[in-house]
Length: 124
Image (cartoon, rainbow, N blue to C red):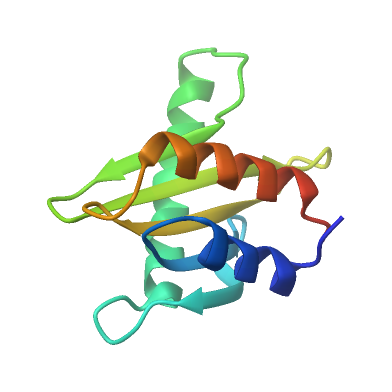
């Protein structure tokens, strides 16, 4: 099992094209940890904004009566992929790993696979 800092470092070093990564509490919208980013990529702002994306999708699934779990959400931009990997707790709250990739330097399938593995080993 890996802690937050180790998991974020692993995402940045093992996932080709990673520009930034964050672990976010989607109940509060607060980033529990961030790594990477920069002046053009404020991960704390992105964490809060993507919390709204997750909440909206969960509300929609509830309204539709869907009894399933979100694995991940992909947002495709012209030059980037934004990948959100959900981690739900038994208490109903949850966290998500938010990964930003350079679209020209990354392999989306491999990034999803790696992020899934990192999420499974994460201990919070």
